[in-house]
Length: 166
Length: 423
Ligand SMILES: [Cu+2]
Image (cartoon, rainbow over all chains, first blue to last red):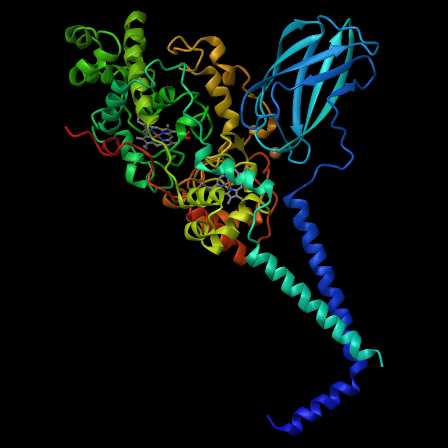
């Protein structure tokens, strides 16, 4: 390459500085946008974080306010891939234990489109508003919801608990 | 004149971004606490002692292991005298056979599964239609495309060739003469003549024969329990990590394999299902694998769940040694949910490189084909796929594959149990 050519180029760059600058800015903008969109897409797939405003409390009022329910998941942390047992405590909003309720259990992963691998059941009344829930199992970590339908004295109500498992 | 400084500024930003991202990519040395926890869960050191099998009273009896070992390799237990368990579950091939579908006296509709670590699974077969390994072993023996034999044939063979071993473990066998008066080939099988002969037998004879048959299964299961996974290079890596031994880590896995591992537990989401020290959650998922050429779409767990509930040999059956309260998996089984449609048991990924082709009917020839599937994901042949396409780059796919290849190791099995018995 001759010195003549090089000086010609630098002269060109000097005179067209304005358009280079614009192009560089546009280019930089594009790069940033592509990277940002790429990361956003990956984030959606990879982590699917649970919604920020999830209520993770283990004591909740049922949907229509008939009962107050508390989950006691047998072990801490809740195990993955292992059958285990919970206790569900049910009382009236003013704190009296609810006896002889009919209770069904279900659960699923709202972000994954599948449910629990098992069909857990309330198998025994333990007294004092406590019910034994057998057959609980979670096959993966992430955001789970567990729903109980409680029927006592002809009043049926539902309650949903959120769990985020490691 | 502000132009030149702006240009320089942009260039500087670009250089810094590029440097930072390549630094992050290549030299990210440490794992976060969360990542370390996942690595330790995948590590073979986290594999617990094999849980007892209450449905099989001889599951851990060494005499049953020895008898099971012999039955596993004995081709007399088949219709044509040429098929044993080891025909399809070959020890040298990670206890599988390298074929898309098993080849016994006929061809199976599914691919031969590995047996390494299978004793840890509460469900057996791709669709989990058996809930113990002894009940499982009784399937292929009567299947018209696998061993193709019958219960009375097997009871006679046991009395003829294994009387002493059998009686030492179980109960006295009937005298040969008494077994000789039973039909030669009778059992609740597909073959109409054998089935008719079975139905013509007295109920107490059927029960007698079935008990011998069940005990064969229990001895074989005792043998299968000995087939455990060995420590792979991945496990050596985690051990080195636990010691804080960077040289050991570098010796165990290459940079590409580590990058693949990072993808596996992170961005690619593989540990949602391939979790724990066997790289499986032992559960059923629909990952949208196409139907095998020439076969109808397989409904998988949707049928398997109903079958195990009705199975003659399940945990609550009279042939099981378990108490009803030991049968929790069966008791709380989910059998009628839409997600069971087209769902198959998550396979272990230990030794995966040694057992191509892949998936429940060998639909994919290579590991790369499997990864390409996860990368683009088609609509499921039946039911709904749980997966989203990954959109990984060429480099990332190669890294993931490299990592999967680091999961091989000779199984942890006493050497004499890996080969056919000496005599
Ligand atoms: Cu899930």
